[in-house]
Image (cartoon, one colour):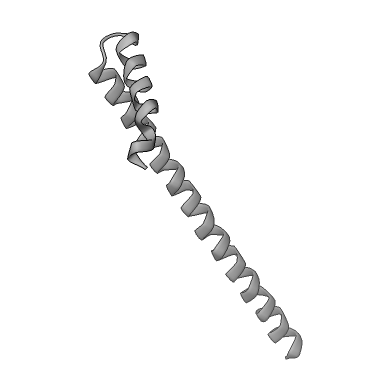
Length: 71
């Protein structure tokens, strides 16, 4: 009976660790999906709003020059 209880306790601990691992992995995948969606939206915005490479370059230069104002 003691060995059975010990085996069940070990399985319970491993199951808890496995559940935590899955939660962390799920959160990492969710963050990756959000980042991917942000990048795709940014690319879509740039493609829709800028006609030439020079316009995009000027926008990025202006953003980088004024970035400290937004923080």
